[in-house]
Structure formats: C-alpha cells, structure tokens
Image (cartoon, rainbow, N blue to C red):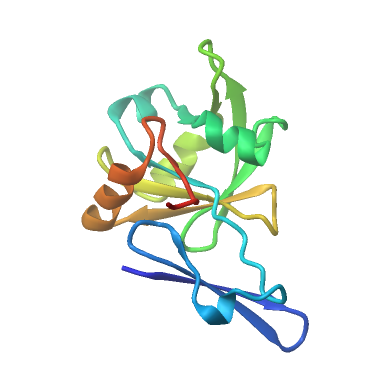
Amino acid sequence: MKMLFFHIVGNSSLHVAIFGDDSCLELGPELETEEQPVRPMIRFVKQLKEYHFYDQRLEIPKEFSDATAVGSEDKITLQDWKGKKWTVSITDRKNGARAFSGGLKRFLNANKLKVGAILLFDFDMDSPDVIKVEELGDQDGQGMLDRATRGGFIHSRCN
C-alpha cells in the first residue's frame, strides 16, 4: 500500500509526498526539486495491550519524543481518524520514558478501541501540538509493527 500526502502551499501550489509499503519516502523526479521540499514523517505504532486500558498510560518511544519535543509540555492533543480532538496529559515514567496518560482512557473508549488494535501516531509538523492517530487494519498494522523499533518508533529514512 502506498500513501500519498498532499500539502497546499500558497494559493496555487500542491506538494505531494509518496511513501511506500515500507513507510519510506519514495522520491520521484517531480519531487526532487528545491521548490518542493518533503519533510520526513515522525511516527510510531503501538498495538494496544490490556495494561494500556488498566494503567491508562501509553508509552511514547524516546526517539519520537526526542525528535518532536513531545513531552516538553504537560499536555498534547490527539486527533482521531474522524477529526475529533482529545487533550491528554503527558507524564514521566519511572524508567525515564514519557507516556500519554490522563485523557487516554476517554480517547480509547470513545473510539471503541479494544485490546489488539494497532494505532499509528503521526506528528503533525504544521501543528506541533497535535498528534494524528489512525487505527490500522490487521495487515497494514502488522507490517508497520514489523518495521518499527522495539518501542514502536518508525524510522523515516531508508537505505
């Protein structure tokens, strides 16, 4: 599955970024100009476990937190795939990691998410206080999980 990301620039320019099955940016000749810069995706993926519902916390991969400065504030907005926004708290864990906490259970329950659901978290560079969340299907989700680090971070640079 390929993903296309469109970015409107000014009144008449549309930039397109194409990402392949491996979540890596595929640059075609039409995208390799200085006029059309393509920013890397900063994202992570998590498969929901029982403890996410009971503990009401979801750990943020350190690579994601470092790359985005998510966690430098006490709160962040999660935007679900329907466009609804949810404010959640960010807390420090004993192991030094950061985690979504207060408000997470409301987000999970309102979206009728269950144990085993696979969520993709995308940092929105145009709105640094928003993380877009998408529920992935089994096949796409498993592919993303297979490419992610142990913590769930997905590298945007490809060899």
